[in-house]
Length: 413
Image (cartoon, rainbow, N blue to C red):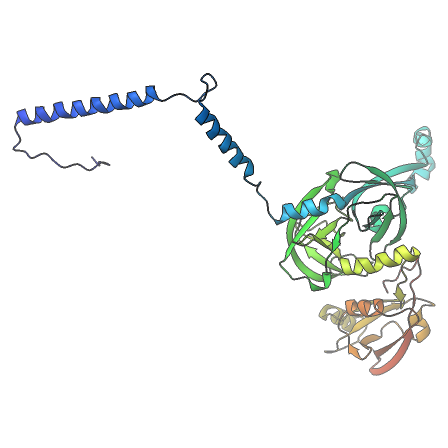
């Protein structure tokens, strides 16, 4: 059998008498040990509520309590950011009245015959309510949020972290960039600090604060997963913006809340969510948001430049489709295919046609539709934009005078 305590074997030539002496000594020693131990146990005072402590013990306990109280609570940079920025993050509750639209089938006499009385009970209008987030950028109550949080709202209510509630006034919205500005009448409010979204690095910390799913003051963390994600890449082609991508959890209700760096500076406004994706969120870069917000505050709108074309990048798939359906072989040519030119648009007035391929703008090679969008967005309304086109085996140059995007424009550009 294996033993866990080593001992020396007794010599086999020891007499039985010697063994009895050793046994007696062992028992004496063992008994003395128990006696000593028992004396310690019974002679040590018990420190419980039934026995008063001595003055020395009271002093010891007091010193110990002071030492425990002086130990700082655990902290990290996220806690610091939340304590710094949290009071400036708000919940925005909106309400809008919409018309109740019944399916066309209910106008059929057959349905009217059987459900007429019930249809008459359906109200003509109903109130839709929504909740989003925002953050205070000035001590006198200017708040940045997303346009879809307050678009069309009949009333806007802003709830601060300390529980105070204010009626908000929408100063302006811009659906093209999903930006909105709200004003409340208050003073000495906590505000955020802006960071620089142009200098973001992939992998740096990202912290989102907002009210997802109606759960106020929720904090999630992650990293900046990517920058410069175009609207077409994330499936919101009607927007004109390059997004910050993050893996910080962002859910409905986070919209309009701040995305922060490790220093507690706002680097973006949380906005877009790809429903089919898991662990991906998107934010408007704060440098872009500030520029849009300044225009909304100044005049209540944003003037976006406009060409009036629908287009597609010349990918291998697009080239193959053109070759098959239009018998047009573009070979290894790169550029952007104009699919449609809107009537009376700046592009139509300049002579652009469907089927043209834009190869250069301002003498810079063009390889994607996103490049065209970015270039147009940076051009002043009324300025002339030189284009190089490929049309029916010929290269030609045209100048387009950039117009103002109509409020009801259906075109992306």
